[in-house]
Length: 216
Image (cartoon, rainbow, N blue to C red; front, side, top):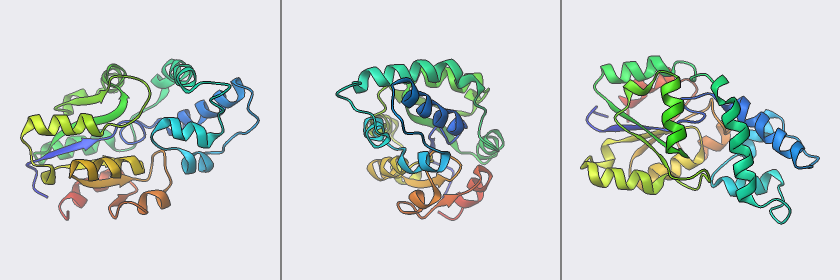
């Protein structure tokens, strides 16, 4: 690929390493609401996904007892209280810098609420690498497809010149919906097997991305 398009980065689990913390938040939510089941990290990575409402169902929450909106708000309160402990993913800053050096424009396209996204990116000193920080208007984590489509339509950039980089099957769905290429990272919220089932371009280390882009 030529560096004349845009790299759309997912945030949670891709550029910010919140996997262990989010996993612990799930078990905290289950315990707090009186559910007996707990998930180890591998099991968590097999059930996590988007929309978040469906992931909560897979985790075993009963919305008749605990409505999804209430669970989502409780989760975000707990998550926001501890997210400052989550570091950038390994080699995130170096990879962003190298891609910028090569002439790539980069943006974050996230299912997080945009004001949270802005705070989290700034807290890790990464905001200078990005053209745009694109997030949702609420906390319910449905889909970032519409946000991406609107931005591309206004930008005039050809989708085929762009790439979506993420850590979940949803990022592959987003790439397909937007018409961009896709790269998935195994260090995030879903297992390698789940990623390979939907995308041929899978990396174990973000530092592999610049070289991979030359072959796409």
